[in-house]
Image (cartoon, rainbow, N blue to C red):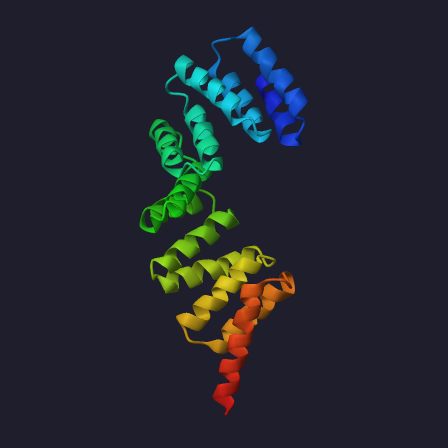
Length: 223
């Protein structure tokens, strides 16, 4: 088997020592293979050595300035360091080179959310979801972005899909409850969502507060 592929398997298994061995051998056998440098950098990012990882990513780009994976890994490195502007720049370079991927669009969207640019996050999160409709987290983040933009009907639609696809997603039930309460003014539906969130995560304080508010609202309606 190709040593890069072997290394990736070890990395996915969490066997960093063997992954490093495979990527080291891949580089030694072909020192102009940009992929091996990117893979080695990904191991270093995983074990918390961003400075060494950056050296390998720079080398990969020197070898192949069209190495999309290098820019993507660079973006992850910056994102982990909360350097969201720099991360977005790297992800955009990766996207310009291609191919497009669900993960790439998702990370770009999350960069803009962390930069407080919710309006810019929307198309990237939407595209991420379109590329992989089974990606629950992309759909959830897209729903939150819609809610922040005041598109409540769309947010509710997406959150309902999240709860169907991930019935143990406490935060989705909580946010769906908030949307039912604020947008539809339906205290009963909101209360049911807060109770589901608490059943999944008993310590969910926000859902607990929401439950109390909805119970009070329903009690007032009966008076």
